[in-house]
Image (cartoon, rainbow, N blue to C red; front, side, top):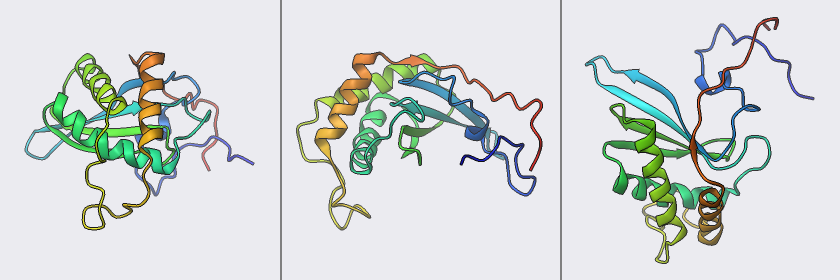
Length: 172
């Protein structure tokens, strides 16, 4: 049985993605999930690169692992200052951290180009050896290419953040 909606635990920091209404977003998309300022005044932007509709499916662990390896390189080919590309725990997409505040249309274009590169990837997966990867046996290039093709065929868009309406919910 699912837990009831509640305000955040007051002993834990707020997590942006827990405020997103996952029933109102429409994948595949790019969404600015947040911007953090560093003590020196630099900005780090976090993007939600969603491939599958939340709670409607999940990318197989081997496929999302391969997507992570491929998109980590291909996104850097199409967008400057990428810090990290990491899979979401829910396995419906990836997060990307970028230094600065690139506009969402630019990120959308870079994500589309990186997905095209992924869909056409016909070489060995980069970083797949015991020395380079913590789980090098767990990859699926065919499934990663299929997810890239499907997202491109559906058409990516910029998704606005839709916050949960927590009015009327009790804190636990």
